[in-house]
Image (cartoon, rainbow, N blue to C red; front, top):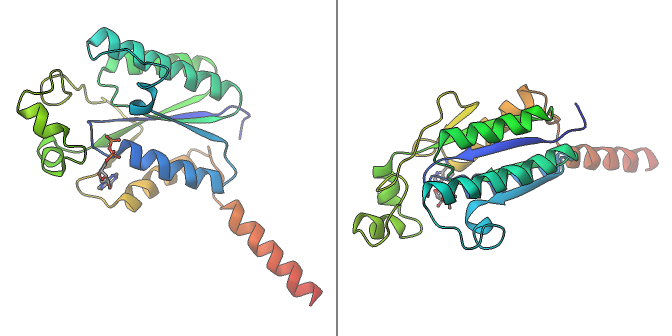
Length: 200
Ligand code: ADP
């Protein structure tokens, strides 16, 4: 296991499950002793990318900024989880190249869910507005989404439970030897109870 962090890049339509998965993954990685930071698209747009809109140019700028932060984190041994729609393939690939150039791993995760299911789920009430034309340039409805051509991981959130999607991603990170297979918290608890048993 190298000293560099890795970037887990979650891409997919609004409501597909990126934020949900990012938060749960960060917690799971934390219990395994992995230093990790989450960059959530919605949140970044309220600070680092405040004022940016949804033209291709602005979306690209937003993604480049997120990618840059991921890159700095990885360089310094902190892993990054990006949870942003990131609709354009060329910029995702640009971020990938920059991170890989530093010798860190970039894993693209396609958080996949059909628009019809998302419009039905409509967790943030945005699809209703987008379909009514009240929101312009809404990804998947009135703005493009370019699916990853060869994502490292695909989770299908219309078919899997949240736990299953998390497990699929964690297992791939284990397979790539980016994270330890054992939960360090569990090990610590086991060690403590062993000590207690020996003392007693
Ligand atoms: P996004 O960040 O992509 O906009 P959110 O994480 O905010 O999406 O919302 C996703 C919604 O879908 C949540 O209500 C979540 O509980 C639900 N969901 C159902 N199945 C899954 C799954 N397998 N993975 C992630 N989210 C799921």
